[in-house]
Amino acid sequence: MLRYVTVVLALGTFACSGYSGPPLSATDIRITRPLPGTSMSAGYLVLENHGNQQIVVTAIDSPQFARVDMHETIIENDVSRMRGIDELRIDPGESIRFEPGGRHLMLLEPQDSLHTVTLNIYSGETLLLAVSTAPTDP
Amino acid sequence: MRPRSLIIGTLSGLAVAAGIWSAVNFGPAKPDAVRTATVLPVKADVPGFVLETHDGRQVDETVFEGQWDLVFFGFTHCPDVCPLTLKVLQNAKTELEQRGFASLPRIVLVSVDPERDTPERLAAYIRSFGDDNLALTGDVAELRKLADGIGIFFEKRDADGGHYLVDHSSVVLVIDPEGRFHALFSSPHRTENFVHDLPILLDS
Image 1 (cartoon, rainbow over the protein chains, first blue to last red):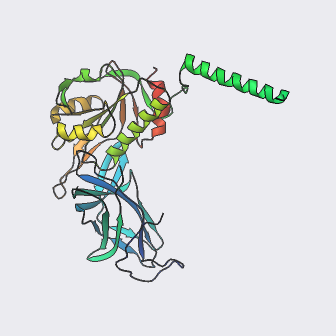
Image 2 (tube, one colour):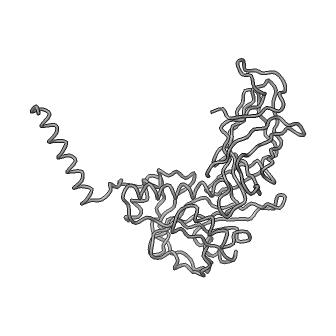
Image 3 (cartoon, rainbow over the protein chains, first blue to last red):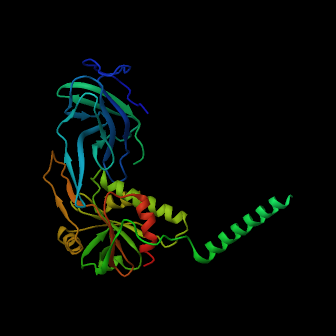
């Protein structure tokens, strides 16, 4: 289900006819509530480039968390290694999926009560998109 | 009632009765062979160690005796693989219980991050994956004794802005009630794999 909520900037033109949103969309957003004993959440979503130019996502932050990191879980030979993602290059028409066991967001140090989580998605200093969702059970 | 309906009704009744008799006498149906688990040719003893439980008890390797255990090495600051794996194990236990298996294995989390995973933190964390679970932590040297002895890898990574990560094996070990390492499940973990294989492993 399409869940993106707020459009902050719409840049470029759209390669896909019939689509009227910003070049970058975020769908299937899921932010987990922190588990007891922890101060972190995981985030999953699908980013899609509807424009005709490559989009480079360099950072994501959230007013509800002190820090948000883009990570990737890599499992090789039954060893799990989590690595940071410095930037995400999304070609025109391409979708990049953050999903359990793969790319994911690590959201650290949440506010005391989480009712809604907003994610601000940046390319450099430019805010590309802001989306909000309610947190779910892990 | 017409004769054909009577026959169908009688046969249906007999089938139901046979099903009930079979379930009562043979228990839940078990598949024949494991599908994804790797069974050790010879069960291996768990090496000696001294660690602390999430409720503050000091334990050694005999903590694995007396019940089947599903053992996973992870840490609470792991946002993705660790909770996903523990959730899979919890879901598998729930499904097996619904299918009538009474002797369910215990879920054991061995923390590879003793610096941050205090017993208090582990207690809150492990209880969110069901009752009767166990979490262990302790000195790195003692964790190494256990991990190295059963082929588990873990390594702390450099800090990134004050938040370090820990690389670790992602397998789930199956330890028998005599405290011997019997089998393992490789990742990625799926609930259905545990639901299929555990009844066979726990019956062996």
